[in-house]
Amino acid sequence: MHATIANFISPGATFFQLGPITLRWYGLLIAISVLAGLNLSNHLARKKDLGTGLINDLFPLLILSAVIGARIYYVAFQWREYKQNFFEIFKIWNGGIAIHGALIFGTITVLIFCRLRRQNFWDVLDVLLPSVSLGQAIGRWGNFFNNEAFGVPTELPWKLSIPYLYRPIEFSDYQYFHPTFMYESVWNIGVFILLMALFNRSIKGIINLPTGALSCIYLLSYSVGRFWIEGLRIDPLCINSLPPFCEGGVRAAQLISFILISLSSIGLWWIFSKREKLPSFDRGEHN
Image 1: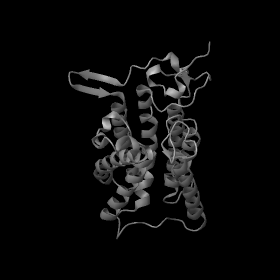
Image 2: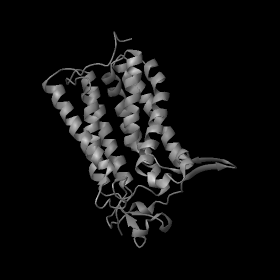
Image 3: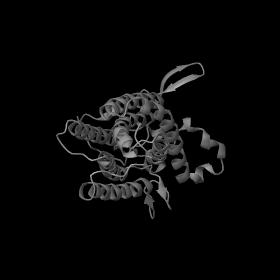
């Protein structure tokens, strides 16, 4: 008999409950991601002589803007579900966030913060994005406990069993599905290892990695993985169409991934062929 992920029984979405107090697995994993990211970003900032105070000041603003951005992005593409129930928008504990929204709003926050603090935007982004990749790898497993973010039916050895309650009506007769959340988690671990290897070799002087290159490499490598993984999912955010297959429309994550692949490829070409360093967004000397 093939071993499958289905051999592992999910304990469900709730990690701990005491009276009205409930701690969900997804929330716990996000908290672990944030703490791991904060420690890692501080470590990388010290290696780049940016100090720890900068990251500690930035992180609360970054987390808040990322959560708000992730929710706004999701609601924008699911507006047909929220326009009749406006106050449901604020019930983020019921689920519904998207990483691309977090990346967009998070990047804007970093840009504004760096302008105010007179720091090089690309230096700061380069020490943050390895933490983002690590956090994505950890946080994706929240989808496992919630029985969500899985793909089309499959009989592969690593197939995932989904309870009937959580199957879309179109696939109610199927039991096993692609564990796309796991694919993305593993892919992000690979991206994280790549970024850390490049960062450390750059710090040691083994390779010449201009400012901003690491950010472009993250966007390129993550987006390539997200593009093909998104094609397997049955719950995509769609443009001008409806799930499960966005027939006649476009999967939003694939479109954004294609744009990021294009922009990051152009960015890498420009960095290495035209300039040694991307322009800073500071207004004076670094602190």
